[in-house]
Length: 381
Image (cartoon, rainbow, N blue to C red; front, side, top):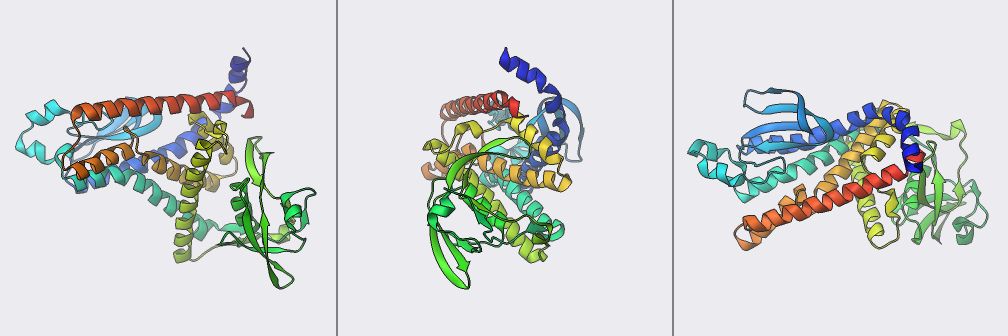
């Protein structure tokens, strides 16, 4: 009863997140599928359906090549269907392929050379990474980045910083080989490095001093009331308006920083999943559609730029997840192609079918687990 009451109490809040959620997810899904679509077209593959969403079509249209572009009622993904696909999962329709004439066979995806098939499949995640780089680059070049120096103003008692020997006035220059340009740079590295020893290089009165400190894992509550477990060392910086500087970067540097930002999200995502596997991180922080909707709504209150930035982060995450070697995902198809390249022939239809069933089961379990996390944490909405 308590869980049901929580759901009802938060229904109003959740409904306020729907539009930002659809905005963010539609952008990410569209570009993912567009990657598949464009590379398929370049390789002469006949595309019959380009769908944003699953299930029954809300509306759609045909382009001059006969592709049905459609918006479907369940906006939790999308797909591109090729002429010889049996369904949205891009499994081959064997009976259709056998009945094809010569012209139709030329446009059949599953009859294309191995390299062409692999390129079409990989194009979706790659499009997600490119989208993220473009968004981050635009943000760095035209919106700018608000920064403040990574100077230590005060140190909390009994903190990791106090134990390590930090002093007020220290300016952090480098952490674990990464140059630090702002206090936010330092926070970002420290927050994802709980219980890991880090080497800090600081400027102390003109002298460079090396300090070893281990961020302590702590629960914090953000401005929206979300509770997160992050690493903290106990350093604070004054937040006076004059301390902040808005920096906009030249286009070439913005693109490089956009690429670095994309790589950071990839590394952080992989690092978190690894920490979950070894038990260092709490799997309860894994979220599903409800969690994404919640974050989208919260970020939307900060402005359009913040929401687009979230779309870039989500694009990287979806591109990365799709590369996991799980049947039903792009990475699963690429795994099959790798096996085909090594063996010199594809796996049997039975082996593929079994793999897809296992992949479907894994994805369903992950979705159920993530959604359960979302529901049990609705009190945070």
